[in-house]
Each structure stands twice: as C-alpha cells, then as structure tokens.
Length: 277
Ligand code: HPA
Image (cartoon, rainbow, N blue to C red; front, side):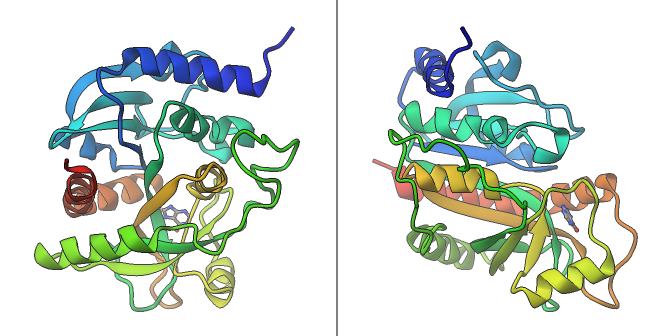
C-alpha cells in the first residue's frame, strides 16, 4: 500500500535527523541564482535530494538540488539549495514537502529567498526586498485536501505570515552594514511564463511590489505549521510600464547572482543575531 503523506514526511525527517550532529535552528530555502549563500555555510554534509526518502528531484537550471547541513557562525542550519517549482509539474504536496519535513525535523524558523520582477516603480533592478506579505495568485492552495491536524488548523490565520520581528532585525542589520533594503508584497504566480505588460500592471494594481514563481506555497505550509518566516526577494527585472524589456532566465540568474553578496550578508547576520547563544 502506498505510504501516507504523513508517513513519507516522517521518514524523510527521520533520515535528515539521523544526519544532524546538532539540531538545526533555521531552515533556509535558496532561490534562483541565490545558492551562493552556501559558501557562507561551514558544510558538514551535503545530501542530494534523491538520497532523501520520498524527496522530489529538482530539474530547473540554476538549482543543484541538495540539502546542506552545516553552520553559519556556529549556528546549525539546514539549507535547501534548489527548490521545487509548481511549473515543473510537481503537485503542491511535492512543492511543499520539504517545508513540512523541516518542521518535523525540529526546525521552527524558515528563511526563504527568491528572484522576482519589480512592480513598484520606486524599485530598481538589483534591489533587495524584504517580503512583508504575499498575494497567492497560484489559483490553488497547498492546504487544499484533508487537513493535517498534526501541523495546524483547517482555517489558518494569515494576519502576520512574515515575521515583523525578524524584519525589524534585518532592517537594523542592513542599516548597520550600509545595505539598503526595500520592503513589499510578493505576488506568487505559477509561471513558467514571465508576465505580459498587462499582467505586471494588474499585479501592481492588486497591491503587489514584486512578482515571482515560488515561495508562496512553501510559506503557506510553513505558516500553517507554526514556523516563523523571513523572506527576501531580489528584483531581477522590471515590470514597471515604460521600463519593461525582454527578460530571460539567464538574465534573472545574472542579476540575482550580482545582488547575492548583500542578501547573503543580511541573512548571515540575521541567523547569527537571532540564534547566537
Ligand atoms: N516574473 C515572474 N517571475 C520572475 C520574474 C518576473 O518578472 N523575475 C524573476 N522571476
């Protein structure tokens, strides 16, 4: 008989736990072109997704598909280098599987990063945005289906999904380090198309500051499970009328890679400040 989702999550989490030398304090999901944060991790183990029981396998370019166990400034972390996107054809249950595994593996804080198109006209390509809220435009919800009561309630409150406390800390860290951070609302869509000019305009009208093809599913699942969430988005291209130019995955990776050192600095300092003993 096929195993239940709970059994699969528990088996994957048990496997990861057997690999930890210390309980990770934070889970980190690295977005497109942003895997370089891994260079700041003192790596203890790097596990291919295919070696973790029941894990989906990542395919998109720019994602190498590994779970990294290690430390950032002595803080034990678990980082996903490469995530699963809905547009790849995974079911929502697969896209969000790792977030639930992290929770069962004892992690209560989740940091997420992504690349996105800018909608707010004051944003420039290369800017870094702290995600203050999101709009789910996936046309579905990862919590549809029987509620997994062991994680959270049927009807989760969404009044503060992204931690105001961690946002405040990140802003202070950025200021101390002379890094300018924007804040805004992330619109999550399925992709794989980038937006037409009219779609960018629509998302701006709806209240979005940036749009991308990830993050929202994992964040909904993590929030349902009671995790504290901090999200950061790199603006890799502009969806602002008059500024829109042709965009490609390569360009997105290039811009994300260029902005990455600053994002990495913020995340690194935030991990250390939050979890130093
Ligand atoms: N739209 C959607 N996803 C994206 C974009 C965009 O403009 N840039 C990077 N990811």
